[in-house]
Image (cartoon, rainbow, N blue to C red; front, side, top):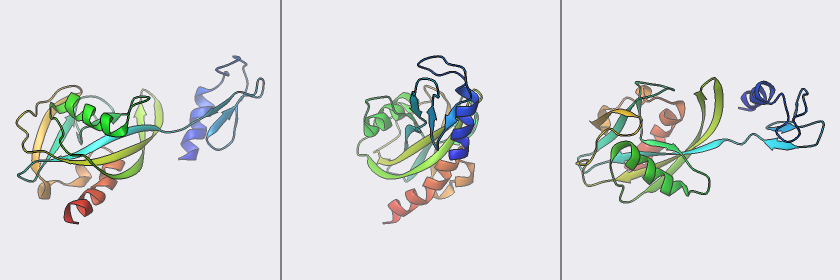
Amino acid sequence: MNESLLSLSASLFRHCPRCAATAEPETQGNRFDCPACGFVYHFNPATAATVFVVDGEERLLLIRRQHEPAKGSLGLPGGFIDAGERAEAAARREVLEETGVVLEGLHFLATHSNLYPYKGILYPVLDLFFFARVASFQTATPRDEVDEIILTPIDEVNPADLAFASMRAAWADFQAYRTA
């Protein structure tokens, strides 16, 4: 991941955000150091909350992504956490915004790193995965950034079909949680 971050600093930071000095930035691991004014910028990952939502019939709620990256691929409802927002609140908000489903209980599962390509920039992301059980998917409808809602028996899901490497990695955490 550090190689990607160095690439970001080299390609995006040709001018210091503070003093506008033009210079080749000096990078140290995951940070940008301005040689002119001493400004330091840390390339920390963005954070996202994603939820495995299951109903009483042991069906998993999947979405078909409406936009790039991974347009048309299967995914789990979720998205970026806003500054100052708790991860749990973001998970609930994203599921509601994308599917219309109100989450009842919410349990933390795991974290996985991801690289998210967006408009020519590769963003490092720390994905936080949660599990939620709902009584039914009666209110589930495709909403914001979703082309289709897919309700499928968990045992019929092929994790290789999920849009992002972090989702595929979290599948094992989800299965372990379900069988514990």
